[in-house]
Image (cartoon, rainbow, N blue to C red; front, side, top):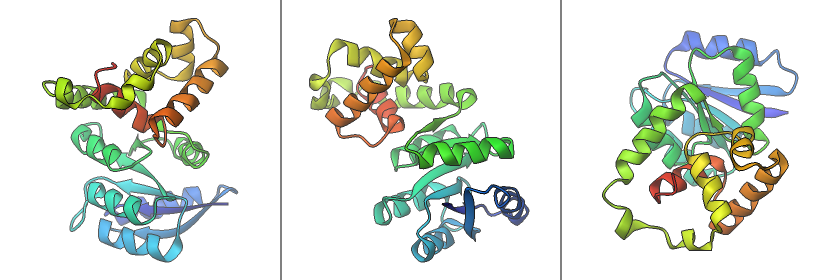
Length: 216
């Protein structure tokens, strides 16, 4: 059973999501919070697997809440609920440990699938927002690459750098495999090896690493 906490300052949204997700056999909604401070306390009490985190809330917003929760409850994974225009907030949430993001108007079945994906170790970068977020990464990386290149880049082979570049562009395993003439299984194995070399948690962190270090 996947334990989920829903965080949003709109009670009608949290109650609606709770009703829908509670119908899924593999998901248990173990708590609801209306702001980031309350989210932290609910996580402390329930130790959830996944938090669905609204990004804009009063008192403590989703970015700060993500930072606190990942600091003190690193096992808990966070999916940010966002609107199309929140790209700067998304960047900050990913930087602070979120495993991905979904648009608020996503179909409930898509949200349930996202929960399972992240629970099983995957990352979630919704294609229709990915380009904007990657652009934000690129803007922040410009002008500082020469002095700030992470030395771990030197551990990567040319093939691994190519995979990082494509992943940093928001491409999935199938798209990377097609461009590099590899099988999806080979791409998946490469990504696993890269994560180990770089000591990163998941492909979301790897996408950020790739853009910040000029690999994409």
